[in-house]
Length: 168
Image (tube, rainbow, N blue to C red; front, side, top):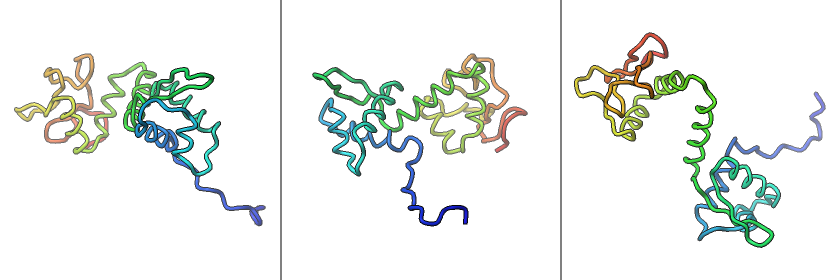
């Protein structure tokens, strides 16, 4: 039986970043800078004060919250919401890589057509008007940050513009 008899069922584990997102949500709803005790009270569910402090400290280390001294404690303020926290993670991962062009090209080549359109819209680039593909936010037609182009640039028809990366 593998020694599982009599074992208590495990509580559902939170997904990665779920508690951070909940803390950020609580901070976002706060009337201003708040204490860890305020956050703990809002989250409820028997969450330990030390757990809240740990999450707030991790968020502080990631640059997602700020803190100011308030007596012997801190008051916390969000810098980023849940989406902002994911964006910070993505940026940190990108910053660790030596070949940023390859990472960004691979990322873009793996996007769904809808996500690619959204990204283009956010960058202020709806793709080249002649339909030949490979547009960029700076209007150079480059899919890479240094303007050299990339092997996984996308054509306006949604196909990969190079020989590497997944086909559409």
